[in-house]
Length: 109
Length: 121
Image (cartoon, rainbow over all chains, first blue to last red; front, side):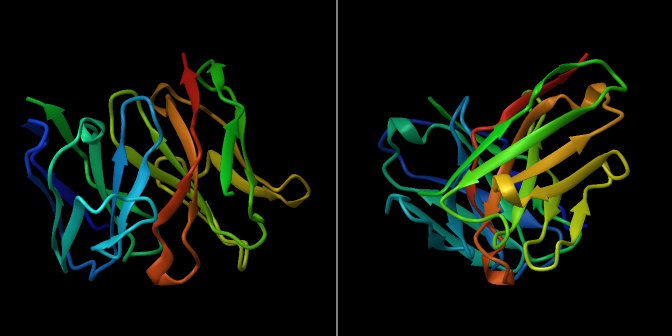
């Protein structure tokens, strides 16, 4: 099973700042990597797929890159609605199923 | 508009059963790939089950294999998750989600329901 590891577990930042979240796969997932945002009390929402393609409705301040085993999600100019938990997920290995990272909580400094 | 709505959650005793439903609109369950994901309180996301629209094949996480069964209700355009022999560690919010498509490049989870809470106690 492919293990996804996200860092840091928690990130404190201020509105307007630029932040970068990391995701590492235990083996290559090529570009089959998605990022999801989960605001407290809500369902996850797809942000990025194919490692760097923004999903419909994802603001341009969200950008992502990477392939193989190393991936990053960058948010430029943090807005209040961006403080949430972010999960990466690989969909390269199927079956048996998806694996998610443990999440990075982005909190207000 | 694509929508997924889960229902059927609630409080159940250990060893009990519950059936969740994922009612969809804006697309057909006969042509879309649907996945169940759960999230224990304060924890991350865990994939638990999947049913294919193409061939009806079903997959389960080891944590639920042999206890949970996923099925399709074409008449009601919904996906069902029968959960038996429930344990305390099955307590979670259960989400259904629609894959972007069947091909490997579209396996991400494009649309999610709002979730239904299952409490085993």
